[in-house]
Length: 292
Image 1 (cartoon, rainbow, N blue to C red):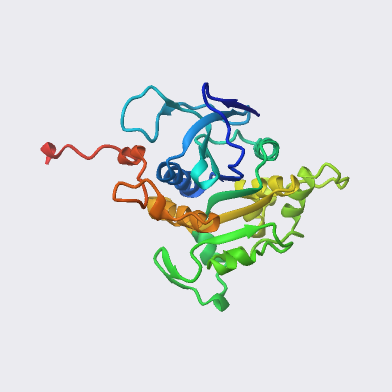
Image 2 (cartoon, one colour; image 1 turned 90 degrees about the vertical axis):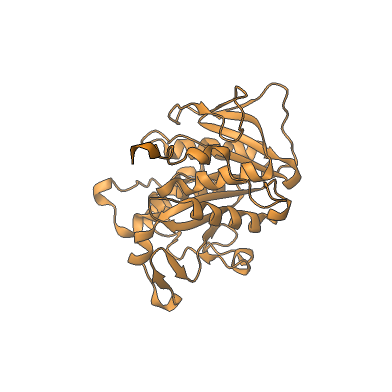
């Protein structure tokens, strides 16, 4: 992976927190990063060129005017006012290359002096129903429920717990088991000193307990952890469809975790959130009313 700095730009070494998405159901992580980039007024400083990402190109996602900028598969933005770097991933990882991609981006984070990495991602809502623990007093009602709406996984403690996240009202991902076969595999594959040869189950061998470690956020979590970086995954359960409310949920959670306040954002109404310009056509143009 090569980090290419744009001409005339320089990297701010004080931006020690990295926020990035892990692609999953509903693209919630990507939408949340879009919202954070737009609202913090972050500027693009460069892009990451990685052979494990599928190529893609598109229009500038944030500017209302055709300024000639194009969107690339993996872009890097910085918000010096919040000491935050945001990486936006716009294309998927090639099949079978997630481990190598996670390794490369963890190397980038470590070499660029990042101290805390926050991964934003989503989980299949059906899994929440499948793994429902009534002791959590969760009341399901459509896609809304009383109880934690944001879950987290941290490497602060061995069991994935982080007292700061608990105080913020996030729920620990109880399905995390560092001794589980897939979690152990991920730990071993990123540990250069591990001599134990483990294998990841094939698709036919995957069980319900293997769902979480089979997702991209798990590989990223394990890679950053192996590099000695503090890493926090913020997760929400969702379904396919209009996932804008879920994006706001994760973006707000990331803001709380980093101490950002939306009152200082670059929203249109004296602060608050700035809706990315590209969202105006997220679901296509409105129908031609003359046909009715």
